[in-house]
Length: 72
Image (cartoon, rainbow, N blue to C red; front, side, top):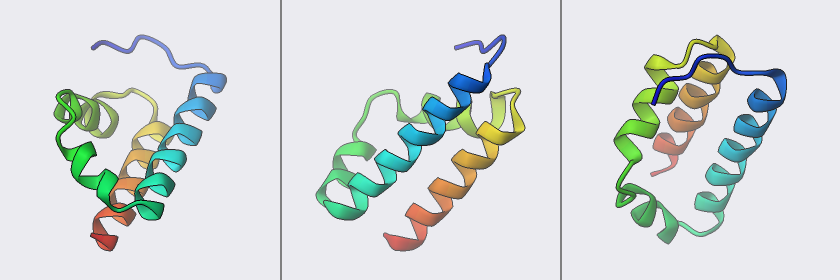
């Protein structure tokens, strides 16, 4: 997946989606196992952490995934 440009609205959508995802997993821990089984998880995480040109998006991924990892 190649990201050419991310608008402010895209950043807000992604930030909210990450927060909902983490919140949902914290509310229902069994969702963590399902999330790990997601077929495109590696691509999603690597894209968000390394390949996204927007620092804010990479930082949101790092923050949310670090926080989630500390809880599991």
